[in-house]
Structure formats: structure tokens, C-alpha cells
Length: 182
Image 1 (cartoon, rainbow, N blue to C red):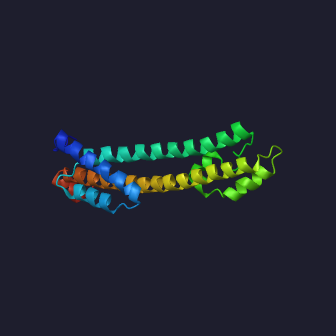
Image 2: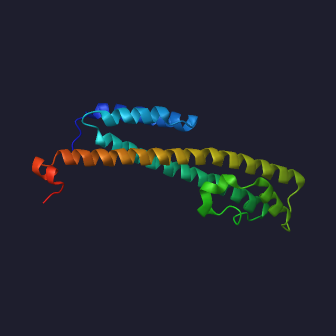
């Protein structure tokens, strides 16, 4: 379906939506972005291309944020493993990446203390600090992933509903009254 919106108008909407998304994730508040999207949904006819493109941008943002989570976890696992020869992957499985931030640092330290190659007290403090910073960052990113997923689902729902509604409007009147297409 060709959009009745010009390319510059579409680009402006998209750019504004991305800026609102960035602010929304930083502030952990979706109100302004949801209000903006709602304004786009009530425009007659709605710009389905914009909704599709923005939904895709949200999907890409979720993917990028999840990649950041893996990188954060992998950096900690690598430092413990490479620099101290301690494998903490049993405590931080990659398939539980969105729960990584809930890992209790004292559990990791207790695990380390049971290892035959115990780091020095100084190194242990440094590793604890690294882990705590990593977990705080992962907590922030996980919250952003959850918000972006919620927004993505919302935009996809609106896109689908509007697409269906516009499709039904284009049915011939007789088929619409009967409720089915032959």
C-alpha cells in the first residue's frame, strides 16, 4: 500500500519517534512516546509504513540491547576465566541473559572462595567491584529491553488493527454486511 505521506514527512515522523524512544528508555517512562504514536494512529489515513518502520526500529533496538547484555556478561566471564582461571559460567548461563542482573555478587564470591586458585584479597575486591558494576549496568539495560519490547508489541498491535480496519473498509459494501469474502 502506498502511503499518502511524503518521504520527508515520513522521515520527520520516524526521526521524532526515535528521539522520543531514546528519551523514553533513558527516563524509564513511555508516556510521551505512546502519546506520539497514538497521535499517528488517529490520523486519517494512518501512516502504516511509519508504524511498520518504527516497529522494525524497536525490534532492532531490542536486539542491540540484548547484544549489550551478552557483551557485559561475556566481559565478566572472560576476566574471571582468562585473568584468574575461574569459570563462572555455571552461575551466569548465557541462556538466562535477562536474569543476569539478579545474580547475587556474594554467591559469586562464595563460589570463587571454593576454587583452588583463590585470588588475592585485592583482586577479589576488584572482581567484586567489576561484577557489581556489570550487574548494575545489566539491570538498566534489561529494563530498557523490557520497555522496548512492550512498545514494540503495542506498535505492532496498532499496526495490525489499523491494517485490518483499512482492509475491511476497502471491501465492497455487500461483502462487509455478510461478514465474509467469497
